[in-house]
Image (cartoon, rainbow, N blue to C red; front, side):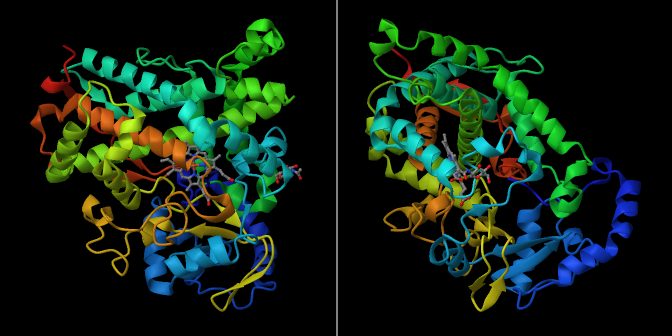
Length: 505
Ligand code: HEM
Ligand SMILES: *[C@@H]1O[C@H](CO)[C@@H](O)[C@H](O)[C@H]1NC(C)=O
């Protein structure tokens, strides 16, 4: 997601900033004042920068504070870009359901406004033909119930490999999020390319490697970018953000270039026709899709699927460590229902407390606190206010899912609240939409959920988690770091110990 934290000094060219802004003072004033009547309430603005100075490094917190003061629908002027933020279930429903079509466009961050991306993107396209075609292909090949069943073997294999790896590291201090990242990355890369692209054993993943480059692509998308606040300067790319993102995207593509080439050359052979399961790549090639299109889609699936899964598992582990009762309850459930050494996906539906723990984690730590940026494609009336065409739209699910008017004791991790409750995240309960709702809703919900469930259940089933130096889990640092996804500021470091009952006989 593209973030609007106020630019830090070292990110900027301060003199140039000053010069240019003074120069364009009148122009910006003009942009502000044209046709902006009856906007949702706005906190006091400064000239030129508008509300930028009120945002800071943790926009989910500062914007929530502004909403508490100014109401469930507010407008903020980020430079010359107007942002409207919805922070109540009613406002979220207006955006994602009542006026779903009008607000279904995307505001493309400057980092990704590139001619090598825009014609091929699923995530950043408006709901146009490109978007429809790509979502349809993905639905059939990887997101449907049938596709998810077909790929369950891949997930079980990767998770089992991960457990073996963790057992081999017994007693060592590990960054569990790294291990989960690599595992969920390989799950996806096997679905997309029939091949692992990362290696758990490559701990000091060579600089300039694939993981590194993907992280950079996301970092660039999450940087406070002057070009987003003052689109008239976009072409200058003052901070070099678009350039840096472009460079890293090209680097990422180079990691699977050979795979595409090789697979393309095998098309039509007898080995091809007799393949048991086809990868997404096989299908795309059969459909006659170009390399550019394949590259971009693969990148977006990796970015959409890996960090979200990893951060959800990471937060769940952190919350469970801090909430011993919940952890023991989960351990008891898993022990009771799973009699084998390994968990298979068909057993996951027998674990209601596990599912409640995951919901509670997504409530407290939604991976994208504002969803991805939507945009108004027409001027529209919402809750008696006017949202002008072109406005960027955030739905502040972080605020909604911590609102004491909606949730009992909202800051406590209490999975029980979801047991026997009808509140679900499939886009019908607007107090809880960690995957969004409406036509832009996450297409990877079921796939992501399966991975999170299998990963978390297997980590609980197979291993005992201990903090290094016998640290007190209740003092675990729960600070978050705002970026493309909301991550833990300090990753959980764990020592894994074998559970006796899970030892292979
Ligand atoms: C815990 C796991 C996940 C969470 C919490 C999550 C959450 C989200 C959210 C909030 C959005 C934006 C919705 C909006 O803008 O209104 C989104 C979009 C998207 N997600 Fe996920 N996601 C998860 C897993 C996945 C996985 C596994 C994939 C694919 C492999 C995926 C692919 C996508 C794509 C392609 C979009 C863009 C859809 C569009 O713009 O039409 N996600 N996700
Ligand atoms: C869909 O939207 C994207 C981004 O706005 C654009 O580059 C692409 O050409 C559009 N596709 C069609 C078929 O209009």
